[in-house]
Length: 489
Ligand code: ARG
Image 1 (tube, rainbow, N blue to C red):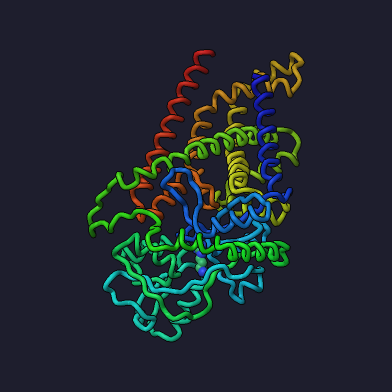
Image 2: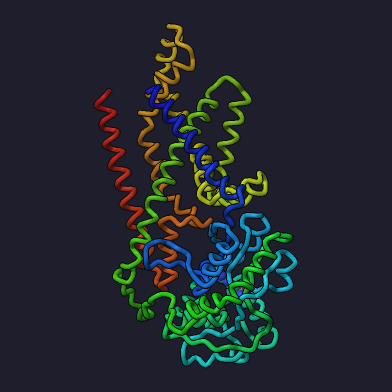
């Protein structure tokens, strides 16, 4: 048992170090530039789920690749909701943003922009035959817009002139489209090229260009004072001169590059599930499984080690240690896991300067959190081991550390196995929470497929099935393990 524990510890340490260093090479040594985008915006940037290879593709991505290649950098792509892009630049999480972003005066106060590489217009997207074509038609209507975009500004300006408009801000453009289709909003203000893709994919929708309330081209955003602006501008000019930009425009914005095959709106009231609609995307969702499993194993394993350390602190005679361990547990059990996750992910770069990846933030938070829970379980397990054993060991002169390692902990662990399995199941399901910080695990894969295909029920049900099968597998293997341990008694 002793050896197993030692090698387990060693393994954990090596893993942690490798996680930390793997993240560092790319952010420190600047041979790679990190771009952050909001991949909800076909044809500018969106997930290509068809190939099952979970790639972000689109007009902006092609330009970014051509530019970084031209300048001799490798490219790494991160994602966030649109309204999180500028904060990401400010926190130095990324070197630049390409997300069909318009260089508005307000944004210029916080970030620097390249030259405009594509001009766009605003449109009204609405159900066919609804006759919502001009701003004045929107009187008394409910209008959807993407949070933090210039379309939100345009809609606000229109609402000042046209009476009775109610605005609904949403995080992602596919959500807006879905809301129109389900009749929760009447129309939306969306950029022309994006609107075209969505209306092609959804024959029940149409779009009409409206007079511009403001400029709406796209430019690349950089942190204030970034020395990348100049080379990027030169690169953009080069792409323009060589006609490459034009090629990308034709590739992505020509009439028939529809974004995703789309099912028509389900009959009202009827549930009509049809899993064949997500068939081509199933590999994409399944690819979330290894990540989820790896994540869970890591967190359980590190949590177990951390929990053991905490539990030992809780039963020692050293008062400050006991106090600290108890305070720690009470904090981590007393606040929501989701909140801890967001704090670790968003605050770490500011506090430590280390640009923690979403996955690392997830493992760290889950380890810290499950350590708190496990410490109580392990403490209970230790205290349940017959006192006589400890007394006997001490009277035979076995040192405290050896006694714990060799005699008490192994028995405690065996006794608390069912509780540990419970904890693991909990972690496996809670791993879905890391989807909120952009890790594309099972749940998020399912949501991406849903957004791309405008169907929500089937991918979510499928994801539910995967979780269930995983938990069942875990339960089965745990009971086999338990039986083995009992036999060896
Ligand atoms: N051009 C608009 C803006 O800058 C909308 C951009 C939205 N981009 C996106 N990837 N969702 O506000």
